[in-house]
Image (tube, rainbow, N blue to C red; front, side, top):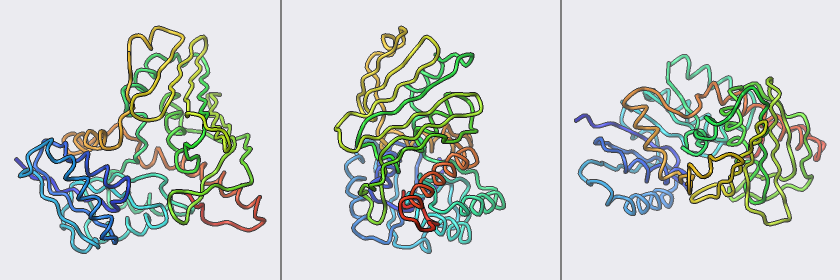
Length: 328
């Protein structure tokens, strides 16, 4: 059986979870980890060993590097899980050294608006199929909700709660909205972000609170609300004509309520962790050349709209010209 070559660039919190998921692949695989931090590489190895009993160790080769220079020249797939500030350069370095057959990019993609077209041109020039890790559309719960929707009615998707990291995670809900409405042309029209910026668990980045409301060309509405002071479990509510669907919680076992019988049909749903997802996407790409994640070109306009809103807000509260959006 062929051994596939997969590389993960950036093995911090999210990259190491991608690694855990890759241990669930059934095909023989060589996995190369790249990170300038030896501590991150060690943490990734530790998490790899936590999950290893789920398959035969002889089927996996694990290599650790501080630089892309040492990875194989022929790569079946690369996951770029660095932060947004260095991702463009990583992609350029990767393409120059050894263009992979496929790419998965973590979100938020980039901090500067001009970077999106630059990377798009590079990927198109080298014909590298690329997907973005907006995972909600790939879960069974949201697939079932989408099947239950009637597009003859307008759709409203509302997100409420605290501690869901508006800067980092808004793109997930924008992508889910695009998926269930089947419309990618979207613009925020009513923005009420708080002046006070919140700290991020990622050093050098910021988070936001407040409310952002937008609409697509179909007339559907996305309403994102992040509460700074209250402690409230994040809730996703989808209203579609006479029916409504509510998901309480964002990962693991969640509560699901619906005005129809769908909640009874589904039972106790689970929104999988990253370590339970990546191998499914990778297996689809390696075996069929397709993936349920949004493509780079599908995700690009949504990212640009999000970056636009946050940059304009930062310029408004600082009175300065802002070129980089400090989210990742």
